Structures are given as C-alpha cells and as structure tokens.
Length: 443
Image (cartoon, rainbow, N blue to C red; front, top):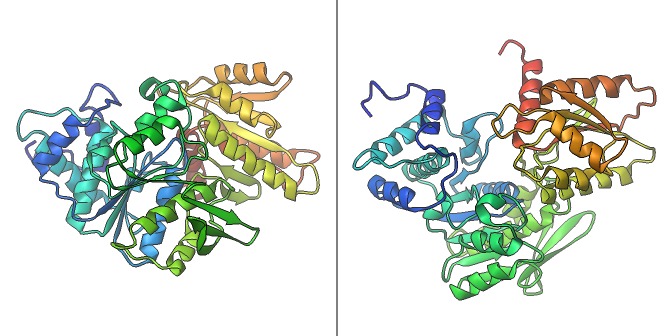
C-alpha cells in the first residue's frame, strides 16, 4: 500500500484490517504461514502457547508476571481486549504504543501484498503484527494465547517451546465440534513432538491424551505428573509427588485458579534450562498477578464485580466464587446481575448454572451483530426460573445504572449486597467504559 494511502492512526488501521476478509473467523494456517515466510519472521525467543476453553487469560497473566519478575523481557499476546486494542500486545506488562502497532500492521500489510495478495482475518493480522513486533523488540519469551481451538488457530503457525491446554469444555461448537472429544482433539493440535505438552483439565478427553501420545509429545497432565495442595494461607506445587515450590495463593480469586497456576508453574519448570526462574520470582508473581474482568472488584460502595464468564464452564467458576462469598457473610445478602450475552453462546447453560446465586436479573442488549436481545434472554431466564425478578434494558450501562439505584434505595439494604456484571467481554467492556466516563467526564 502506498504510504499516502496507508491508514493514519490505530483506529483507521483497525477498521482497515477488519475489512480484509469476508469472514471474521477463517480456520487454517496456510495463509498465515505464507505471510510469515514473506516477513522472514525468525523466532529468536522462546514461545509458550496457551490454549483452553477457559483459563487461558489467567494462565498467560501468571506466566507473564513470573518471567517479568525473573528479569526476562516478556512479550504477551492475548485476546480479546476490553477497552483498547493495545491490551492485546504487551512487553513486560506494558501495552504497546499506537505507533508501534501501526508500524507492525504496516509491515504485515506490505508482506500480505508483496506477491499474490493474501486475504487475512482481523485476528490473523493481529497475530502476525504482534509476533513481528516481538521479533523487532528482542524479547526472551513470548506468551501467546490461542484465539479459538488450537490446531487451526493463527497462533499455532508459530512453533512453541512449550504448549498448554488449560481446560476443555463445550464452546465454539460450530468450529470445533459438538463434543469434548472433538474439541479436545482440536486443542491438542498445539502440542508438538518432544516438546513439553501440559494439560490442566482434571478429566481430559481421551482424544487429547491420544494425540499427545501419537505425536510423542512430552505430555504432563495435572493430577498425574504434577498437582497442588493448598491451605487458607498458601499452596504447594508438586511434581511426581515431590513438593517443588511453596507459594502464596494467587491474587486472582477462585479455587479453580490453582489449576491455572499449576499449569503456569509446570511450564516454567519445563523451560528452566533456558529461562531459569526462582521460587521467589514465582511467589512475587502469584501475589501481583492481575487480569481485568476476572472476578474483579471495581467498587465497594456499592460492591461491583466484573466477570467475563460467557459459557457454562466459566459460569460455574463464577457461581463458586459468589457462593464462597456468601459463606463469609453472616446475614442474607442480595446479588443483582447485569447480564448480556452473545446469541451463539449457551445462554440456557449459563443461566441454569447461576440461577441459585442471582436475586434480580438486569438483562441488556449487546450492540453487536451476534448480540442476543434482552427480551430473548429474559424469556430464557423466565423459563428456567419461574417468578424470577427480571428487568430489561437497551444497554449494559443502563442496566448497571438502574442496578446501582435499586441497591442504594433498597429498604433492607446490606453492605455486602453486590452487583455482578457478566455474560460476555462486551458486557464487561460496556460497564467499564461507563465507569470510566463517569469518573472522567471530560475525556
């Protein structure tokens, strides 16, 4: 593209790359590998790929923090973002600048058009741009989150030095298959021969185990090759029955985070010969790890929790966290849900999982082509929970505002009453944007 026709800023670039392919998702690695070749992209750093239905983001955050604490230069590529695209590409926990992203997009665009034009999706361009930037920057290790599945995801075009599958459950069935066995096979596609292949699922599909064995991966499975024990004060990482590390509990809330933490530590242990890390560095990472939108408290007056749970597996983790809070509260408290989902997700499964934890549902539309209508969500809730208290709104921000009013004016208000915002990244992002605008009205 001639320089005078190139997009002028990050927003223009994002609009442009969104228009390059007729489909938002187009599985396959051939097109990405073709552009990798044209970019002459040489991987001069270690790569850890992280796949899984849920837990990918948390595991990436723990790995990113661990290697940063250990003094390494760490690149991290995750998706989706909540407020800014820059959240997807970080060096040592710091978002890459608009200028750096524009330079990376320009490099990918030049390579894409240097021969026969290659059609790339938004995610494929983003993945190539992130890796190009990492290669230019000179990092020691890249933590790469798989976008969808594993075997045919753009991230899988780059050879990992260690690959993790955090969990396997039903999601994206239209692309990955209708059963855990089919989905497990797709996610196992991130594994490689002789390379550490870590699995954090407590009951992994046989298809995943079989694939790891067939390709002769260095397969390590939780509760078999590594595991953890925990108390109210700390947790221990064990390998082959021997305690390797005693660590503080992760700052990310929820017992299930220990599975993610154990996977992260297993990956760190597998690469100790190349990237040596001390127990102290891992411990500091556990104390300091943060990930927006994962049972994140953003206010205590009222108590507001943001969680991107968008499928039944993630909803179960959210339900467990909410139930654990109730155990610590001596009086009856109310939980108000600001809830919106994409229509192609398992809406019934999410509602059914959380039906015992929610007192009032503030249901909203999502301004997205895949967004479910609030009226459809309300009908699902009413079907599963007869006599449920349901209120419908145009946006999650409006739903949140009304929930705040209701919780403040309730006759039997309790200081531990809470609002939980969940159902989609879009739902959480909408409320985050609203909170930011209210805090900074002049921006």
